[in-house]
Length: 201
Image (cartoon, rainbow, N blue to C red):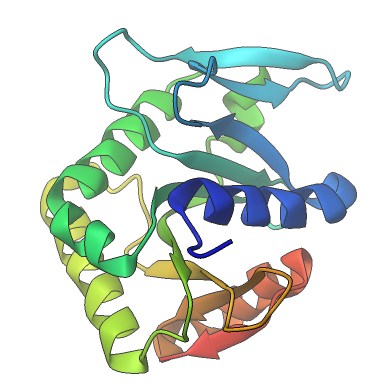
């Protein structure tokens, strides 16, 4: 394995979700050429049900994670490198805003989740730790775009990231959460629930 690709980073984070047991669930994942076109969530009986279906030409996020205990939903955009995320910040922020707006009116299995704190988050792979300056610049860039387009205020203003890191000679990919210092308390809760370290920038 020479490079932590977007797919590998997404898999690594989904493994963390799986290991967390009932703490989190994957409501949507968007693998390359994958079949998933629906946001799914368990209803009151635990049965997985469709809560949103994407249109044929509708742009989709890469991953949607939900934690009912923390009343938190993460709409995640993933790329192989952080630079790829910054290059499409405006588009990705709009995708998060559009999906959050669509989910805000959903009934059924999603009705109890409409009040969740919903965040736009980033996910990328790396072979060396991302500098605090670069990570903060990316999250600030996204936060600025979210603020400009989220007129209904469905998304929380904070944006943070998951870096999936495989350093030279390592045999595993380790995820860590990178967040602004002003978001420390919530970031630490999310990181603890996924059993990943948190880095404040």
